[in-house]
Image (tube, rainbow, N blue to C red):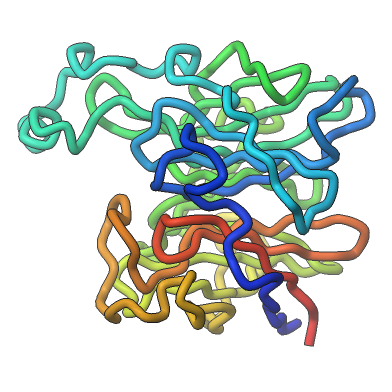
Length: 311
């Protein structure tokens, strides 16, 4: 198996609450694209989408260099009102097990975990994102945009939340929470079939290819500390029979801004409220034979960047 080393870039997060009031203090879910040439007058060469775990819109930053500096586009991108999900708690019909959380406001309408791709053939930017359904389940929808700023036509996909969509040998898949792997028969419009690929404690994932190998970067709920791991996806045979190699540590909190000074304890499901000793939300961006690793630092306190290299 090819091995990778992650090298941090800079000595602070690239996205943090001090950049703009509108992004708040809970920052997670990075997804970056190189803005295609067919978008006229872009804000920058790169767009970085991210979220608040309980937010009412998807955030957006832009830069002319992948390493930054990044500038926040304060209007953001997709908003809850245009997401296709409920926008008010009064629209929810929670089952018994969720009623207390809805009443307290801990569980409320939101959108988060953007996963954004460039569709050159249709000249569209496609965003997958999760939100809260009327019955309080959380699912993934998709919306499209002609400029990467204004998204429209939200539709359900059938995938679970925290979905990361990828293509492998001409077929579209999505890896999601709890180790689920989904397969699409229609190039990512829907994901009706799934199988268990990874550990049921898997939280956030990112999938990337290197040569003829496919890799999964992920974190796990309950790890102490929660950190970024990497496995090779063994893609022989039927997709339902794919397996992961034993995970290797890729990156853990080592600096104060990553939460290294906070107590080490098992992580829990749900948002990270405040600074914790955890790394979450990996996203691997590939360009010109370079691999860049975006991740959430100190739980969900900011976004940081590292470079991935084969060792």
